[in-house]
Length: 101
Image 1: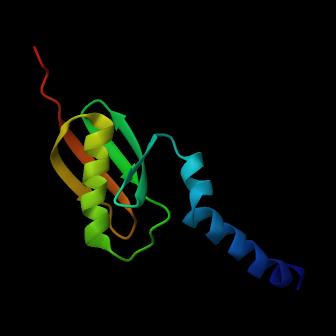
Image 2: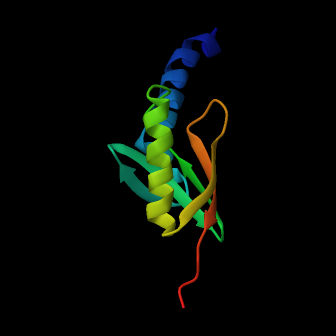
């Protein structure tokens, strides 16, 4: 019974943490905002990951485009390949960083 009384409050806390700024501050990477959507972008060599925690599941086309732009800004590179992980607002890119001579 004690767990049943605790569960609703704990669920609200967990959902609040996952849906907003608290989760974003825990993630490594650079915060980049494009079109009102904030992404945590991590770049490692020719690969990058952008994660969005606050925009929910609506406007997936907008998020997809904004994630590409956020990765391009954070990396300074063109995107050679880009994909979204199924069911979450996490985007992965392979980068094309032409060296300038």
